[in-house]
Each structure stands twice: as structure tokens, then as C-alpha cells.
Image (tube, rainbow, N blue to C red; front, top):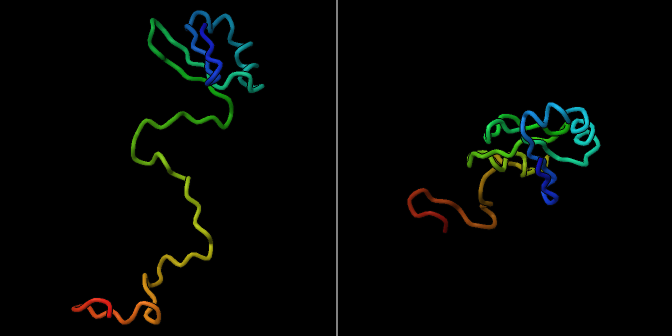
Length: 96
């Protein structure tokens, strides 16, 4: 079993996990350990984390989902310019 102090993750073989399962569950529940990565023959087969812990998304698309909060009074359907401030928009000549 290897324990990374920085990330709070444990990497453990399936055989060793079988023997220490209940202790690891208690340690994850208390927050002492953030994640347990279980391997079998050197390959990761499972990841155990506490409630509310989500696996990092490896995909580029959607990696910032939920990171922007728009105010309730934001008008996203309104005009992008104000004629009184920016002038009148003529489709041929543009703003004047």
C-alpha cells in the first residue's frame, strides 16, 4: 500500500484491500484519506472516494462546467449595443 501525503490518495492491491477494507472505509469516511485506488496485477480496477468526491474529468470538453455563475438580473437576450451611447447601426455602413 502506498500513501501520497500531498493528494491524500492510497494505492493498494486488491488482495491487500480485501484484508483492510473496513479500516479503509472508516478512514475515507473520516476524511483522513481522500481516495483509494485499487489495483489488480498492476492495473487500476476501481477507485473509492467519500461522498461528494467526484472523479476528475479527463475530457477537454466540459471541464469547466459549473464554474461560471451568471447574475439573475443579466439580460442575455438584450441588444449588444445601446443606440444612445454607440450611435445608430446601419446594416450597410455599420455604426455611425
